[in-house]
Amino acid sequence: MICPKCNEELSVITYGGLKIEYCKSCNAVWLKFPEMQKLGKNLELKRPLLNPAELDAIRVKEELRFCPECGKQMEKVYFNGMVVDKCFDCNGVFFDNGELAKYFNLFMKKPVGIIDNLKFIDLCCSGELRKKEVDMQEIEIQSKEKERSVISIDGFVMLFVLLILALIALACFVYGFIAIGSILCVILIFMLAGFKLLKPQEAMVLTFFGKYIGTLKGAGFHYVNPFAQSVTMFAPISLKARTLDNGKQKINDELGNPIEVGIIVIWEVQDTAKAIFNVEDYTAFLASQSDSALRNIVRMYPYDAPEDSGIESLRGDSQEISAKLKAEIQRNVRVAGLNIVDAKITHLAYAPEIAVAMLQRQQAVAIIDAKKTIVEGAVGMVEMALNRLNSNGIVKLDETEKAKMVNNLLVTLCSNKETQPVVKNGLE
Image: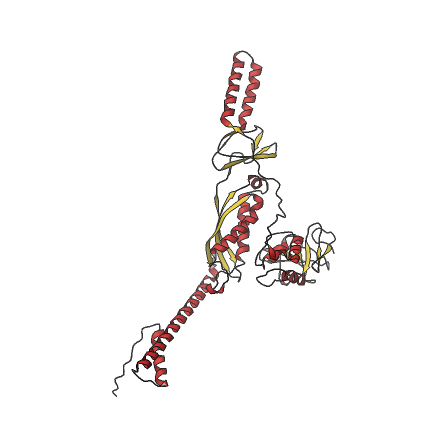
């Protein structure tokens, strides 16, 4: 079979009795649903797996691929943020590298992040995923630079040296050494480019003819190599804690109900080299990864759940959800050198199109609970009244009279309106 992505022959490897077709170049895998179910038996799933081959196809602008098994054109299917290739005839699914872990993360109790397809299969078949949580590995983005300090001199000391140099140049002009004085002036002007001024919680990433040489940190007046240039030029990198508010997002919860969720993320730049060189714009990168993490977390939990059910929900377990959200965002932005201080849900509500229906449902549940409490209390009061009348010998009632008394007391105690008593005087 030929890989639909890179047109190379697919290799076969055996994992725990499963024969997996994969591509050595791109690590993509070709699987059918029975094999997916066998892999799922080794995992802790919170709900049954969904067969992507049974989903409806979507229209995409990109060119469709051809099935490695039958050679016919495959279709694209979408579910929960994923787009994969499927063949209607073979009922097989083609997972690009990393997509297999994304697929199983939708159904696992403890998602493992984005990891290599073959590594995921190996960990799944060996049972390692049951023992520990696997950290996300960067597949598409590889960290090339790490922050290091740059050598600097106290700016005031260097300023004193340049002042002496300026006096020497002035003396050369006075005593007729024009050429030497001119050279010293050129050197003096050139060396002025090495002065850098930083405020508290600021940093400057420096390059030397395009090569990263280090990061300048620490508030004060510094002097560095005059050939060193700041990547951000006139705006140093802020190391202060900042807040990201992406607004409200409409997401489906575990039960498929559309809800509106808003979060704030408190973050800071931890590794300036990664933030500058590994991503184009680390603030935009954080915003997109926060949205992705929010959707991945929200779809795993229902909006609300009964208190005695033991099921975690978005409304009832906000602290636990926030902790998982923070960990998910941190894994996503690790490659950008960012540190997530905190992530909290600031807005949580049903979407307007179902808000009225859900409010009626909550009201109905509240009314049922209230009626249940009232009835239980009324039955207890009726039982107490009958026992007191019987024990004190005030009146003896037969079964018919007891039934009438029970009926009258229940109507009186359970009625929504104030009851009006009817008194019989025995006169005709």
